[in-house]
Length: 201
Image (cartoon, rainbow, N blue to C red; front, top):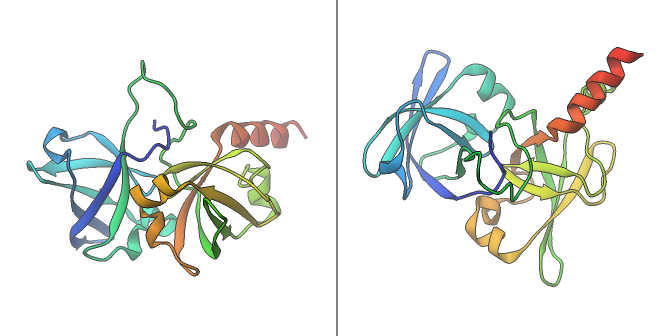
């Protein structure tokens, strides 16, 4: 489990296809502290460390992950938001993030709002997906590329978030432009409530 508070960004060093899987090797400041089998969120996707050195580590993304996320679009040199799993006696500074990306969304607007950056993302939604809780609510929580954010201007198939300069500079949000695909994980509490309501009908 994660909190959506990005620790740093990792740089993609190598991409290797293995059947339908993708092995991703990245460099990051705490690579030497990682252990094999440890969980790390990559743009919000929980992946397992399979090997590491003092300066780099490797994870494997399977086809299901590649189909649901933007990891299959990665190129060598790209920045990836990363977060190690939560320590249970630590503070939950963001919100409960599972690392299970629901879908991707497209950035349709990016503008400076006199002190923050406002991003708007559009995603595909159907009545069936809405019943599963794949929706946002005003002032609710959402994870975008693994970053815990507060929703504003929640619409049927789009929402906006405001990014403070620190977050903009210290995550890969500074690389997001109109047309960029991002990973979205909707609030797990909302998904459980939606599911229980659907079963109770």
